[in-house]
Image (cartoon, rainbow, N blue to C red):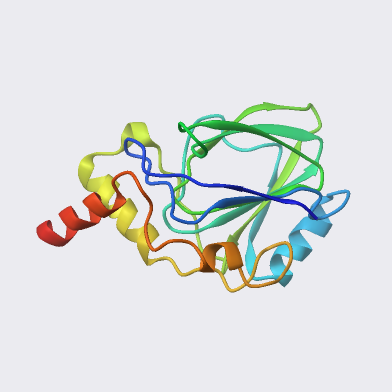
Length: 187
């Protein structure tokens, strides 16, 4: 099954991630809420939900990595990844996105019958962070939470170790080290 990989770097007050965003095309053939949630839970991604899409505004999570599976229909995302920043990606039934904490995303289009399912590594609780509402202090706190998150034990689709994340560089380009240096100097 093909896996797409998208890299990111800090942009404004969007931390993004040193881990690549992964898309498993046809990862769970045919999709279906039951099949998606069962696979996610089987591989350690719980605290599951079903909803007709995701938020229609850019947001990221600082307390957990997230997987998003298309159970029915199609949906178009705008993601804070790729060369030059934002990239649009369309997912269809059976596709699964593995979203590192810190990567901003929003729904920008969908079919009338869209149904998405989500899960969080280790069943962690998630938060909803929006760049527009972040002070410098809140941004730094979100970055600190993201940096402390462990790499998930298993990929939500394959159940295998997350090789793409285990082999990721220790930091991202474009300011992450500058931010960390400032944190070290300022507490």
